[in-house]
Image (cartoon, rainbow, N blue to C red; front, side, top):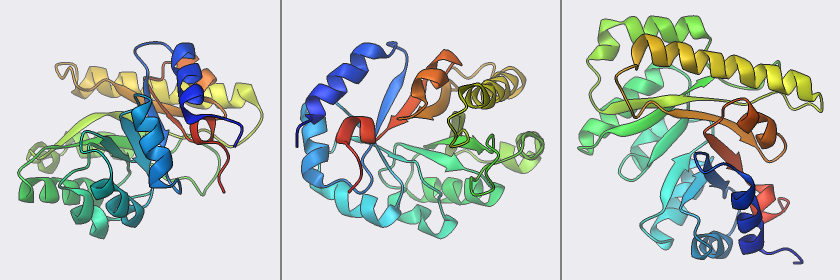
Length: 223
């Protein structure tokens, strides 16, 4: 393998602003590769399948911050609730309530991001802004003490049109500001705007992203 995970990480880190968190997308990657990235100083890793995450977590250093970045099914939350650091793809009130329930069972507050549908593709998941306003204004939401909404996330359309991608990220940034001002103005931990992957993270950072999710840029192409 001609590339080095350490070199890739150093190159990316030197090119992104200090306030931007880097999630190394380790899905489908072997434990050895994750360990190499850890040894190079990386601490946040993102997985998209609960089963894979459960298999990897006990076999790697316990100060890794695991992020669940894939589509999350309510019935699987219980498996990761004891250790998950942040759940990105939260896109239903049912899921929010289940995460809260499992947080309560594990005596911890679980951090989440609300996922918005900003792309054209119907295959992408996510809330519409109207749905989130209804949830955040509801009395039921206010009773949930074992979740903490720390921001929003979204995925741009998978296209080569940079202007289209930029507009979609700009829309998400506006949603983030709207929610911050209306609901989380006094919550310092509402500070995550998670957008940008290997192909479009530079555009995302220009549009205000504070967290990017990179896989192939760090680990090489999937195999």
